[in-house]
Length: 336
Image: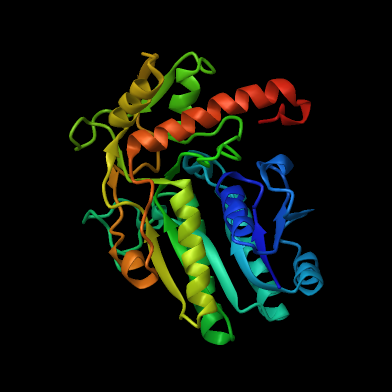
């Protein structure tokens, strides 16, 4: 019996694979390695290089490895890119997810966990935002994820199939043991970008908009440590294995920080006063979004262990420094 993790060679997916392997689970990773890395997953996991849209391949993996649960991370995640390439996002995030769900149903997989996003809420009128808030995505990225949530809902009604959709807020940090972290070249995550700038990998970084109706004019986000997010998936898997019904949960800490506050935290941790440029707003960015996370805490018993911005930043900085050293010593990591 094993768990199939799609996108398991990527940032969040690799942390999930480590979490499962550490718990003694058998894990199969399906990843096309477009943004993921084979070295990011532990040796105990089986890596298959392929596409989640290949239904025949997914069915074969389910059969061959006795897959009982699928945890689905694979997809495209950059909001501005989704605005400029909406059809690419609907292909990667919606069409291919439909193929994966179809393969799961056809193969008798009854447990499915989906990597969704707070972007399905758009710019919520009430913050913190609860799971029953209106769903009004502001970008093709958010819309593509919402479409997959709808497909999962309908598939679970029509078939013997249960799912959990986890709506992530802003994921950051790295494995506290230094085994994996955010490694994609050109990543747009704020803390990743700030850490790269602090370490001299970028000459400067941009702040996109300082005229929002927030305490310092910059956007506010709820940052969740990637380790806590992986543990939320473990809790969701336990819920489904125990006969739990299909459900949707926010994954965040229920408090937010502005862009400038995050940059200040990186400057504190690094001891570097790096250059910051003020740039225009980006399309698709809501001014403020913070999770109401009472539901996942109460229903799944999830309790965060790394709810500390300075700690999140420290782990991210440590990984960024380690990544530089690893790249110098390992040619196969040059793409990171």
